[in-house]
Length: 124
Image (tube, rainbow, N blue to C red; front, side):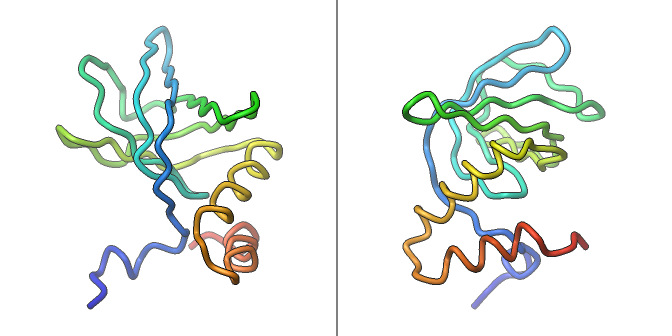
């Protein structure tokens, strides 16, 4: 059975564990990505962090071979275990890297078409 949260989700999420560097104003901290999508990321809650939920957060996800994904995020939910962020903006190069990463990690022959649709479909 699919729960309501899964039904509302339009973006394919993939488990992908790597370091993320977050910054907001003069605050900087690191954490581990739990999963990501074209719409946002979920990270492990860092030990010590200060985030203002009313301000954007810059994220830098370093991939292999010096490739990076840069996103501007807003905090949408938090717990003692994880923090969830929604992507507010992302540059063209980063979205291409993220699209490819999602595509490769879905293990689905139709993933490329679905991910492309997610990129161009109007937001609701």
